[in-house]
Amino acid sequence: MSDNKIMSVLVTGSNRGIGFEFVQQFLKRQNPPEKIFATCRDPEAPRSQELKNLSEKNSNVIVIQLDTTDPASVSSSVKEVEKHLKGQRLDLLINNAGILTPNTLETQSPEDMIHVYNINVVGPMLVTQAFQPLLKREGGPGSSAIVNISALLGSIEDVPRLFSHFPVISYRCSKAALNMLTRCQAEGYKDDGIISIAIHPGWVKTDMGSDRAPLTKDDSVSGMMKIISSLSDKQSGTFLDWEGKPIPW
Image 1 (cartoon, helix red, strand yellow):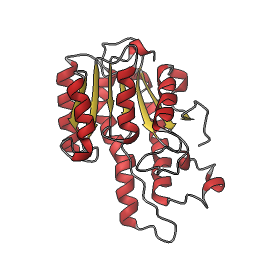
Image 2 (cartoon, helix red, strand yellow; image 1 turned 90 degrees about the vertical axis):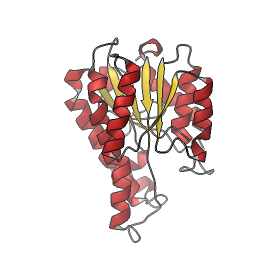
Image 3 (cartoon, helix red, strand yellow; image 1 turned 135 degrees about the horizontal axis):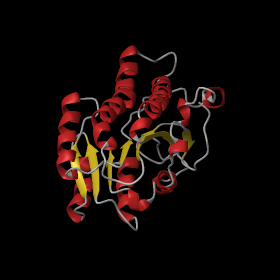
């Protein structure tokens, strides 16, 4: 996908962290999208004020309430987006909203596992199901795309290297499941001209990543934007890091 082919994009969890950085960097592009749908669970919350301010200064940033785990909220957001698209296609969906809890094999509870899985896997599944008709709609050149923000910790092959430092059981399991969802979407939606890819953003300085993280939001998202700009059908169903390097499943 080149810059001039991304006329519309929807980002979940866009009121802070990596999601907010995506919105900012799309705005800075030489050819910014005509519609940037910036979604978050509670647009009226204090932590969403920066996003609201950005929207007030930029008419192409449209803030939409979206709780990715609530089917009614997802359905309502689709209607709102469709109203703004006016028959055009949604070019890009970035499933960014996610959560991490610091549980080990000894402390992991079923309640937490279900909660994290619901946000990190079921949410992206519901959102993509709901927006798939808009992604496949005629009205734009080339393929549309689904970008699932995954994590290196979802790599099954890589577990021995990092497990002792970052056990985070529910997070690991949920991201491994998100990777499988990505592969299934790539296969199931290929005839609709929809690319699906999983990207590891790196260990980033955010509320989730903490100040110990070595990577800034700017650098992480800049790298992912380069991948998105050059996406092709050949990359559908792959798992890459923010620099475009393949990660083992």
